[in-house]
Length: 314
Image 1: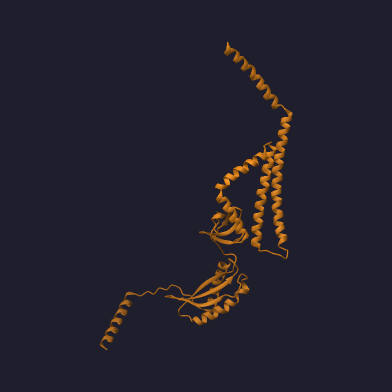
Image 2: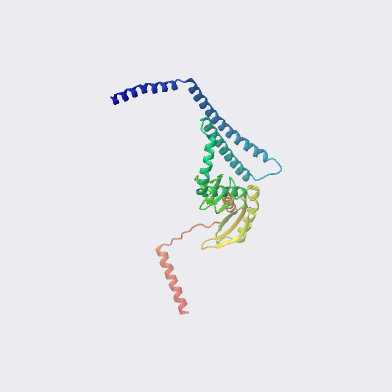
């Protein structure tokens, strides 16, 4: 009897639950509230994207105007600071948008922020590497150790600096690989883009040639190169004979160039030297092979033995 009463009561409660759910589904106020919330979230996302986009444009234009002022800073530093400010702007705007969306969804933002502060304090003790990365990134930018566009070597990797963030640094090698380093791991850096570079070119001259005459011709040619190539800072210098090898004499030439232009200038100097030597008839050594027939070898051996006997008899 008791079980029958419970079944009847359960059956009577189900229609009431279904009725309440149906009333909620057809409640106009609820749908209007959901629609308004969805529109607010969409509007927040659109406004956030517009603010980030136009904010980055404003930062770039600001640095472009700043470059025309009497107080100028290097283009390397401008590019680095502009990239950093763009990242900071994006972080701040996205954080504000997230808080606004949570408030739109009727989530207690104040309680969430307070709880996040306590949790963040606890996590901060274990996030020492993150703090170290941020602090090191600040000092990299503050001390101008390297900037966006510089060619650097960090550890065993070389490349052009693509981005310096608050936590990581990105460099791109000349073969296309992108290397990402936490700033805290950047302990040793070699920057090739601050000072002028030196192009070193070795020229080989045949033993049969007059070395002094070859040096004179090269010197006359080197003086004219700064007029042809603007990346050469000073006229190239002919140092003289570098080494004497079995089949050639090596003359060394150095040229001071603008930063990271020594590879290009080195190739151009070799090209100019080859053309100059061909024009002046100066021979560049090349591998040679001398072949003897068997009869010639026997004649040489006979003549050598006769000469030896004559010397012995004398």
